[in-house]
Length: 290
Image (cartoon, rainbow, N blue to C red; front, side):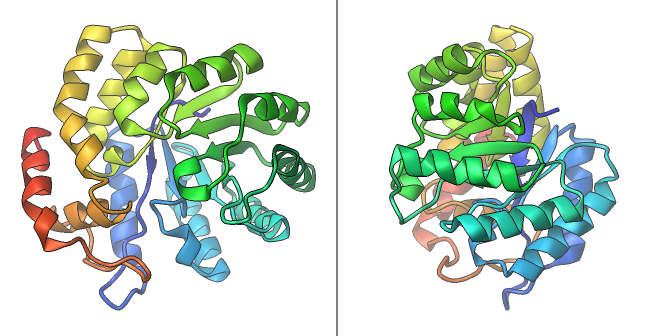
């Protein structure tokens, strides 16, 4: 169920920080028309950490209802509290999400045993497909392949978003966990290489801006059409890199606003993109054909 180009969707906001539900609805339809294979709602790119519990539930429920099973809807439900993560994941299940993307607990810096018990406790508490999410650059902890392998005792832990950008890491997870365990890149710049090594797709930031091309890239990579995949990836590479000139999703929301797809809103502590980066991002958009 989880494969190909899956978008880490932004949460459109008005300048006062309120959620723009009309823009969210339109983005969802655009992604479905562009053949995006899954929507991640309220994840890192969706500013899930600054949404209230009520807002998060409402957004997930609204998107689930709108999508009506046309593609999977995955809810970002991770936090640095095991109990709170359980509550958010239970809400996601209640809202009808097809799965939960659960980031490693940030700030706390748990041990590998702590990570194992965190995920095992959640998996036992909520019967929903769970995708682990490892992004050490943001969380200050690293979910190691041997711990991931231990977690396979929980049948509803079905995959991982691996955002270290390390090709060898993904290969080790594949070797330890088998081909049925879903490996999704969490780093657009290395996603092609990961898929050519056996990963099943990408949870993409770039897909917010160019969903059809990200779909085409993944389809080519997953069908071993390396030449086509490399050509598309070369066109998108400037976006892969420049969308991280400032912390995600600051550049992504700026580009979408420039495209006329969302208002300019973003929530503190994130702030609008610095003017010094505008020209670089416009050039990346041009190179990507946006």
